[in-house]
Length: 62
Figure 1 (cartoon, rainbow, N blue to C red):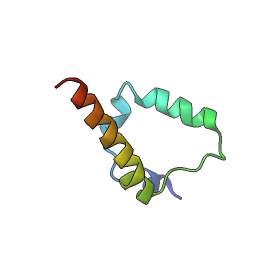
Figure 2 (cartoon, rainbow, N blue to C red):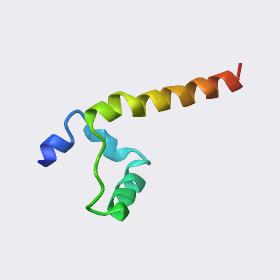
Figure 3 (cartoon, rainbow, N blue to C red):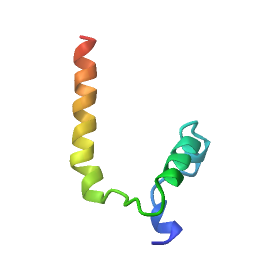
């Protein structure tokens, strides 16, 4: 995979986010054997889990 392929669609200013350095550090600590999630996992099960967490959070504030 090329760098271009890894960052496709990520805005350049993402590097200015306060969450960017800790994310990079976490990836480095995980090591080279870590497998990134697939497009399906990101757009399916992982997204579904996040949506459910947000729904629960919203329900707490109703």
